[in-house]
Length: 113
Length: 120
Image (cartoon, rainbow over all chains, first blue to last red; front, side):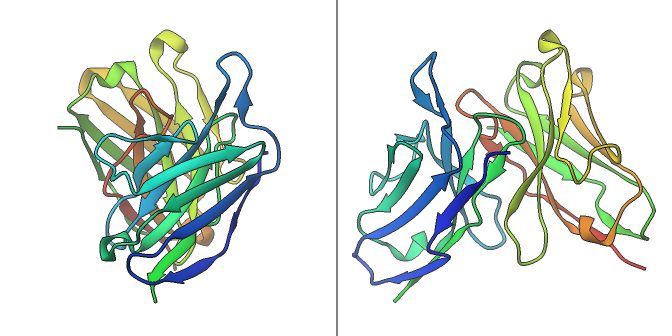
């Protein structure tokens, strides 16, 4: 199974400041035939279902604000919120869909400082 | 508008059974892979299993903790996904989300979830 390790578990950021969440996969999730990382990010707010933010490690889902961005370097992945807004308070999960069983990171709780 | 509406959750005794349903609308249900994901109280997201399209064989795949106890099926004529849960354990207590892979990942869209509580 591919283990997804997120860090930190939680972080508090001031409004307008940058938030950075890290995720590391225990093995590559890069599919050689299409050269894509099968890595997604979800935002999960209390009382709501999770929502897809980023797929292919760096492609923003339609309707997602451009302050959200994803990047990849080998088996290390990063979700960046460039200027934190109040509505971004949530738990964020990385997820690999490269191989079964599909797995998620443990989540990172983002709060306002 | 894409919608996934789960039902069937509730309180069940350990060792009991429960069947969850998920009615889909707003997309061509028969064309997509469907999965169930759960979240235990205070914990993170955990994939339960999936069923692929009939044209892909309609095969299923499960996470180890539920394999041989849970069965996922689909009725494309009714745009409905099912999760049959048998031999339930206390640790199966969770919100169960129905999810659809709409072309980007296997899990693009989530239903609101239905709560399953296993307790005596």
